[in-house]
Length: 113
Image (cartoon, rainbow, N blue to C red; front, side, top):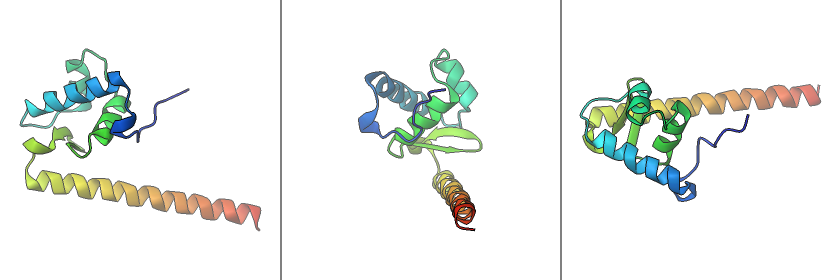
């Protein structure tokens, strides 16, 4: 299965993706509460999948924060919500680095017993 890169940067987004990002930011700016991926999918008439929403949030340059409650625009977020999102992302990053390190060690041990 060929899936789009989750970590595309804004400058490499297609014209359609840029339009989706503009739409998503505008949608989130109309809300003061968190929007679940499901709510975003429904409001976009199904044009945005979970994966697309994550990619757009990543490509937003920090304008869209995320967490267990969904997505929110930074401008509509409290300082506590922003700091929680940052801590959550940093924790995910550390977990991924630890997983990659464990895989590297195991691979290295398997080729150099």
